[in-house]
Image 1 (cartoon, rainbow, N blue to C red):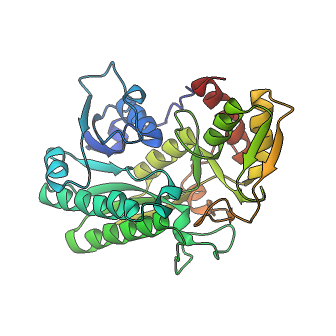
Image 2 (tube, one colour):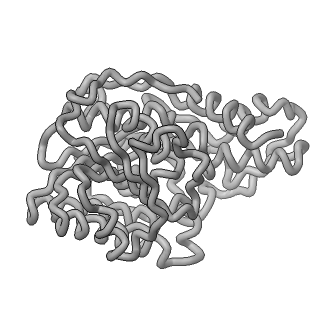
Length: 329
């Protein structure tokens, strides 16, 4: 795994020493856990392992790391896990946007209700700081490109996006009512090693099953920003260090976009299945609730002094290489 050496010390992040990471066994969460431990934090991971994996978690830092297998929809479990916590990094959510079209209360339960339980448990345990993983999908499909944080009204078109926006509203209300402090990050498409879903992951599995053909949902012209997971985690911690407003809202993404067709071409190239034919299902989006084009303005992130190491295509190529090794062809 490629690891960034972040330019902070334990002291530079203040006196917070015990962090709860919800979804800490997942894709982004496990990378964040690694870096928090590197910074000297004691980390408690709360995860139901529905998509996260124990193998993503450290096995040689028992003094700095505790794992709790639990359910964020169970308030009593969350309250118990919140004892003696200084800050919460709330990353847990349903990772599959398409699932919400089939089981429509998935995002309500795993997103909105889970966030309420986290916030209420924080209030009852006098924990005041929360870092929240939101998403670019809160902006909907009619936002200007690149989309700034100031754009509104936000009109999401997916149940996942609605849940993220509702969670943001709950968090800001806890800031205003109970004196919390929040860092809210609206992610572009985050990709990298340990990925367990997404277009690159799906393409590799499809080619593993049939190296002669690669099905692409939609017309392939869908175009979005992609951000390497290590860049994402570094940006979170950098902004958490440097920004100290009551509500700190930031887009996290890269400088450009990459189309689905180009991703398919890169994956075919990296797998070596050069004779694979790309077969499009048609239509301007991959599934109901998909946003065909998205690009976040990252000017506010850049103003803090942080910049990404990969552009979208570079992140896609790097991810394809590491996931091919992890999945195995």
